[in-house]
Structure formats: structure tokens, C-alpha cells
Amino acid sequence: MKSFKLFFEQEGDSVAILPGGFKPPTKGHFMALQHILQDAKRGIVYIGKRERDGVAVTPDMSAYIWKIYSKYLSKPIEIVVAEKSPVLSTIEYADNNKDTRIIVGAGGPRKPGDKNDDMKRYEYFRKHKEKYPLVDVKEIPSQEGGISGTITRELLAQDINKALDYFLPEEVKSNINDVAQIKNILKYK
Image 1: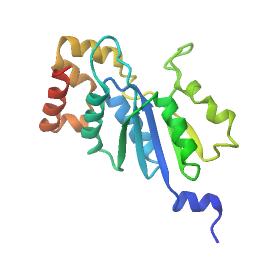
Image 2: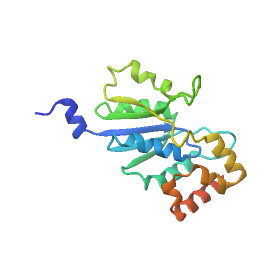
Image 3: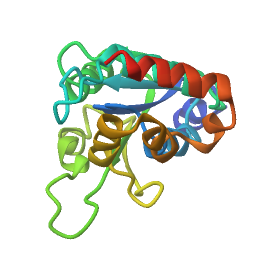
Image 4: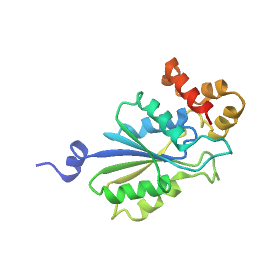
């Protein structure tokens, strides 16, 4: 007879959730999702609605780019524009899927004193572990040397080709059709 833990590890559903703004999704985001997908059967990406730095990368543009990225991932992913916020969508998903093992990817501070610490956004799960025994908030190490969304958006405003070279995952860069599609998406901002 299998233990409860073994049952969920071998046969139960498991999902890796990567919530964020993704304006646009960068190679750092792509690698972060790859990192947490290792321990799950499938993934969900929650995209925020808020604009960043005045550069009009819409949630739909981000979703379309994630759809292209999904071809290069080893497991299926669902891409969702969060109705409220990516954080609230993650909590709602956990509330509605109590029998699912959930791995939430969160970035930590990039340097000491950094206020951009996603781990703090998910303290709710740690404080209520009895309510969420199958939820694990996993700190994602900085990817690609800490690629910057702000620099990506600055480059998009100046030179789309430099921006693409800077933020696209290597796997995607090797497919000229996918690069062209992403370039066309971002030209219509």
C-alpha cells in the first residue's frame, strides 16, 4: 500500500505556477519556469495586467510570446492573464485545488536590501501551512545573471533587434520564424 505522500508524488497531479508581470517574458522567466517544471507534471503562467515603464507590452502580447516559448518546454503549460493579480490568482488556484501538489516559483531579493522580494508575496502559504500542505513556494535563483525587465523595455523602445538579442531564450533565437513572430508582436505595441 502506498503512502499518501508517495501517491501524490507518483500519481497525483502536480503543477508549477509562475506568476508575474512578464512585460515581456524574458529568457530569465523562461529559465525560471524550466527550473520549477522539473518537479511538476505541468505548469501555469499567470500574467499581470499592469503596464510597465510606459512601454505598451500588453498582457495579450505576453501571452502570445509565452505560447511561442511553450514549444521549447518539456511539459505542457497553461497561459492565463490574471483577472485580479498573479498573486491572487495563485492563491485562488490553491484554494480550488487542495488535492494538487503546487510549486509556486518566486524570485528572491537580487541583492541585500532589495525590496523586490517575491518570496514575501507568498508568506500567506507559509503562515497557513495547515491549510496548504501541498503548496511549496520555491525560491528561484536569479537566471541569466539577473536579466532586467527594465533594460528589456528600454531596448524595445530604442532598437527591437538589440532587445530581442538581449531577452530571448537561446532556444527561441535559433528559430528564425519564432523570432520573426515575436518581433511582429512587439512592433504592434
